[in-house]
Image (cartoon, rainbow, N blue to C red; front, top):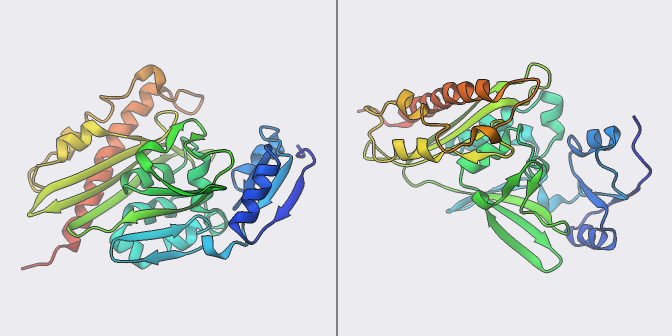
Length: 295
């Protein structure tokens, strides 16, 4: 199918993009285009105006300071997946970006577009939840920061306002020993996650001091798996049973709200969730062991 007619504007400043959003309530932001363009071609989206923000240089790139890692909204999956420092300090994000689509998609798709779209089967929402991100958005009244735990609301629904642009994400740097991982069961037809699990662990003195575990593909938006986190915190890495922790992955999830479609039933997704939660925990623990100094 062909999309309906639309006006097209390429901008080089965030303020110019915001002005266009205010002028046309039907306007949509275009960055990588991997979500919006297919929806336009299928008739699921019919924006009157496309605002192309791909040339806004300030929204592209990774910056490090003492407290946080800032990733611009236009930073591609490939840039994230190829960054050695991110693999060292924020492996859950780097691995999730590496698992997106194929090389062509990773070279073009952006982290900001992915997170703003809020697709429940996409890889990055679980990863940014596990990494305790802060989502930075900008509107005509200025910038605001949203805790990632408050950002995803439902299927393709987020806390991002209609006249706001997601400009970047901030990730806290860890002072203690930390590691993370992301694993998924991909759909054989699309590569999207039937179920994906992201894990970030912090360890102090051999004991798990903090755990954030999140999943996508199981509910209508990415969710934290708090029962798993509660099983982990306070336990020693050597003695904790990741198998037992994974068995409570679905304890707070209402089965009638779980994704259930032609690709996988809700019951199958529940089984996958436990299997992939255990795998992600083991992968994170293996990375943690590898990062610790030997005697």
